[in-house]
Amino acid sequence: MSELTLPTIRQRPLDPPDELKELRQQAAIHRMTYADGHQGWLVTGYAAARAVLASPHFSNTPDDMHPPIDSSRMRAVADGGKLKVPPGFFLRMDPPEHTRFRKLLTGQFTVRRMKMLEPRIAEITDACLDAMEAAGPSVDLVQEFALPIPSLVICELLGVPYEERVQFQANTKVLANLETKVEDAIAALGNITAYLHGLVQRKRKEPADDLLSGLVESGELTDEELTGVGMLLLVAGHETTANMLGLGTYALLTNPAQLAAMRDDPSVAENGVEELLRYLTIIHLGPIRTALQDVEIEGASIKAGETITLHLPTVNRDSSRFPDGDQLDVSRPASGHLSFGHGIHQCLGQQLARAEMRIAYPALLRRFPGLRLAVTPAEVPMRSDMSIYGVHRLPVTW
Amino acid sequence: MEIQADTTVCIGAGMCALTVPKVFDQSEEEGTVVLLQDVPPQELEEAVRRAVTLCPSGAISISP
Image (cartoon, rainbow over the protein chains, first blue to last red):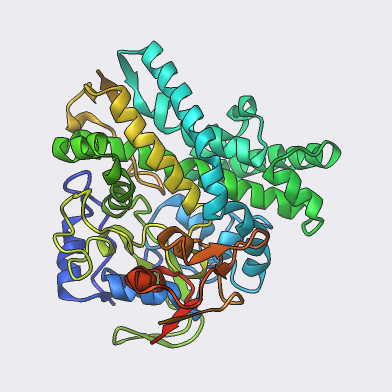
């Protein structure tokens, strides 16, 4: 039995656990004992992680997945557990089911479409900054900036009335918390499902010019599947960019030279966003896959049925791919990071996320040139307990 | 350099269109790769190579 279990305690808030860096320096792939005793694998090297994500021999369904850490939520999802994946939640499907759903959506998230959305994202950003300025000079940046911008954008894109967001935002938070009890997670999932199911039926009666109405009118999906797709897009659109904006601002405020470069040089912002994606890697406990057949990865023989965890924050610091990977450097070539994944599940909304961040970070820094933390860096509560890393709150002043 | 694109493998992530918009676009309906030119001008060859590495599904390839 392997003595290695997944280290989760960070010594410094922006760096993955030091033990993982040491492991990466020894090898790219390691035997690891999972929370249920399963003898699986842990990947810490860049090339190995990319190879797993690109391989068709790994499954992303929760059916035979073992939990890498002992959290109630992971236990509930793992191995076809109590928390069932809803119909239409295609992130956790394999081809050909996954392909059928994804194909219906890819046309909505192209680079060109996201370019067309940019003026609207800029308007939303400005409105949030106006509200933040009015509420200031001391605010929680998560509530005033990081959360409302992606939330308003995804609600508008999907066709969710923004004033109804309270009906799912609290439930999304419960689901994303790793320590949520199984019963509470099932209840939260039920609440979001009921809300979205109702919304799908409203779109059927009164279609509008939005993504959900378009999917309803395509006639390709059942109401249950439409509900699952809606949930995936809503959750993914909320939790991810919001945490990047919050954690990214924290990272910049604690690295003043990098902040100045992002603020003062418009040509840096584009690449700076890639570097923040790489350096922060908010997907901090996965992705997790299970081998469908025996497969060789970087010299390791993985057997069918074995679970493999890719520790992306460590992988994205691999110095053989990103020299001085532990340094935040907004001017380095950072593309090729695996923060949006790789392979067939690579983030569907990544071009939307890029557009939001490329607009929002510089707009924030230029509106408040004197922006600073209102507490010490150590007092900022980190989201170690959530499936997506970030800051719970970010008290700032200017 | 000549580029080949396989729309049956493409997942519409848009990395190619993001990296070299003069060479790659995405279809309106499915968002899959559309080649704007099969033989890119020399000054874009390096960017095209980068796009090939960034493609998550191996849908684009090049021959010399």
